[in-house]
Amino acid sequence: MYTEERNMNNETMAIVADTTAQSTFAVGLTTALNRPTLQIGSTGQAVRELQQLLYHWGYYSGPFDGNFTIQVKNAVIAYQHRVFLIEDGIVGSLTWQALYSGAPVNMPILMNGSSGNAVRIVQKVLKLNGYYFGTIDGLFGPMTRVAVIQFQTDKGLPADGIVGKRTWHALSKLPH
Image (cartoon, rainbow, N blue to C red; front, top):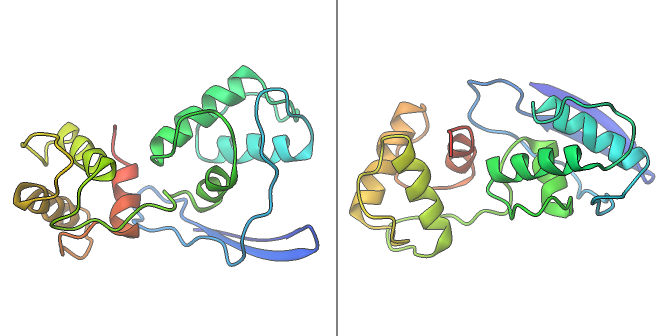
């Protein structure tokens, strides 16, 4: 577990992040992040901070020089993939939140009867990892529920068949 207090823009923010491979949940920020949007060409302390966060999560091994290069963009895209964000290489509010928490953010709660792209993501990740054997159709039905329960059981989560924050976080740690 990693805990840090930071003073940013005259606001003190407590950061508590999951840094252990076996942990299943990360607690986010106690106040909203107020960080700049970063992309190729950005420079400065915020980029250096980004580089350090990407390094912390194992996605960046370059210099902490404050330059948003293609290497940084590729690391951002890889991290965005891990936490189920749009993989555009642009560091906006959701990417900052995910970088500080080490977990997916702003994901919907899914359960029997849910449908859409988020369900497809869950089905795809569970299928790739041997939990789901149905069609990736975006419909959260009995087969998806059984797969989620089996996954939750294997990861020591409450096996309720509902994909909430803790289950999303555990899913983000699987290859996908």
